[in-house]
Amino acid sequence: MEEKKKLKILLVSDMYYPLAGGIPEHIHHLYIEMKMMGHTVHILTGKSFKEVKSENSDIKRYGLSFSIPANKSFSQVTLGFRMFIDIKNLLRKENYDIIHIHGALAPILPLAAIFFSNTTNIITFHASHERSIGYEALKSPLSKFFRRIDGVIAVSTEAKRSVYKYFPGDYEVIPNGVDTKRFSDKNPKLEKYIDGRINILFVGRQDPRKGIKHLYKALDYIIDEIPDIRLIVVGKGFLKKYYELSISDKAKKHVVFEDYVDWALLPSYYTTANVFVSPAIGGESFGIVLIEAMSSGVPVLASNIRGYRQVVDHRKNGYLVKPKDPKAIADGILDILKDPVLRKDMIENGLETAQKYDWKIVAKTVVDFYEKTIDEKKSKKHKLKRWF
Image (cartoon, rainbow, N blue to C red; front, side, top):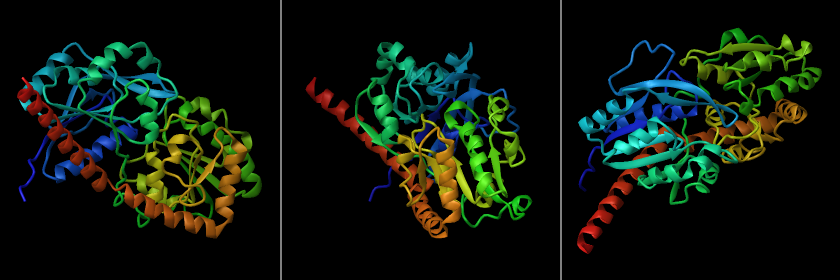
């Protein structure tokens, strides 16, 4: 059997490290796994205000990345006077087989990459939303860019639903993944939190979409039932101080803020937890943190929103509760903590679920899609030549 050609791939996004979030994680793991397959992979992104101490030459940073409010959270946009020239020169020099946009079909960095591209273009849509004012306002010009996309991926049927109404076409659903070796139930626990108290874990930005204030309010109900409870909050965000106002005087001594934790230590936060909670109110297309928790052998409680229903089967591999309802969150947590059989079943089923999303499997599926799209594009060109 003839060995398939090794590809030269450019992953493009306004969102990448040192910025935290699902898209940077997604790109990072595709990069690692595709490199291990023998492909040449570069990442095109913006320069961050946060210092990057050391970085290899595969990361191409042009322009400066700024945070802007979007979809009840914060997104990034990259700006720069020389950015367009730099991108044009990069694409001419490297002659990529694949240019793969991640995030939204939005100004400015992603559109610049598509504009100067002379190769096979792929886009992965990650977001979930009921309405996009940007897509509505710019649908006509953005449609011209969308027509230059050769292959379209959505990380879930929810992500596809969100964008399909603006840009209909053929979508391939390829999910987010998890590093099952990094996030494992075999990871050591953090000794400072092994003191007999029960640990609830939240991982994520403190912004409106993540619903952290509802978890803070749920603590009042939980403390009445289980006084030795502790909520560990990993993740900061612009609105941290504002959301701290949601914590009652009774609950304050039960909350520990970890802000940004060391990348290498994050898996141990999961294994230290007795239950992981994601009380997001919407706008989630998948929920990488849910899979990370499952892979770590932690029972998961999440809001019953469309994006999370892509991953969680209620009372099987996780527990779903009504969004924006502190009492429902508290009751769900108490149900998990008080029912050892339920907890055991959820952990076992969660570990099984996580294996299906291992990054090796996801990355291979993405590369298979690249090859299929390249072949289809060549076939179309061949037919056009024959026609004329």
